Image (cartoon, rainbow, N blue to C red):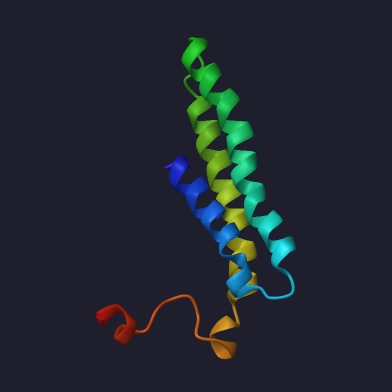
Length: 100
C-alpha cells in the first residue's frame, strides 16, 4: 500500500507540467513532499518494527502517517484540479482515443 501511495505522488509530480502551467515547479515540490516524507518516516518505523519486540502498535502509527500524508497530497490535488474540467479536457482520455 505504501509503495502505491509513493508511486502515485511521484507520478503526479512528473505529470505536473501538463496540468499546472505557470505553477509547475511549486506543485512538483508539493507532490513530491509526501513521497519523500513517507520514505523518511516509514523507513525507521519498519526498522523498529522488525528489530524491537513488543512494539506491535508501531504499525498502527505507520498507517496513520500514510493516511495523513496521502490526505495532504489529495487535498492539494483536489484544490488545484477542482475547476480544471471547465477550462480543459481534464485528466482522462476520450473514448475515441482509447478505441484506436
